[in-house]
Image 1 (cartoon, rainbow, N blue to C red):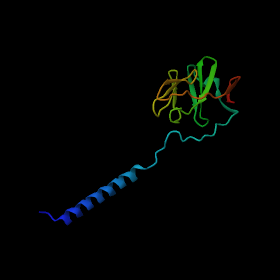
Image 2 (cartoon, rainbow, N blue to C red):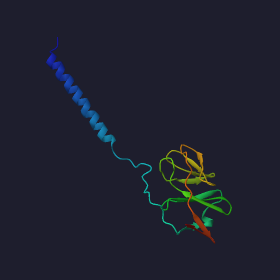
Image 3 (cartoon, rainbow, N blue to C red):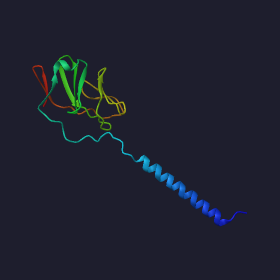
Image 4 (spheres, rainbow, N blue to C red):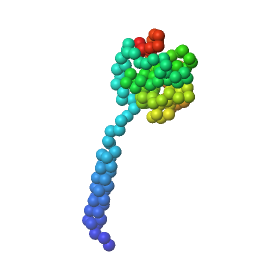
Length: 141
């Protein structure tokens, strides 16, 4: 037969070792990763010239990451602007292609014509931004 004291000691040591290993794994897993949605809440500056009409392709758009704005031209001569922050989890949209504004984080797509959700997981449209078009220049209003 085995000694009960020895068995109890082994059990305590095994449980203690498992707890230490679990704690070490938890500590390693707590490294902070950049998370979507941590963009500053302050609105982008206004009155700032963004681009020229020629730089915004028809049926597409141009993203201005610093200003957190995307300017689109759904039809020739019609310009729209939207927040470049995805309404799903706050990532910055990455490209405008095939009539949509695309978020790289989870695959949401928004229509260049009105910012509406074309493909989720986002459920809310991109908020509109006000721009002015004067001559050839597009300015954030």
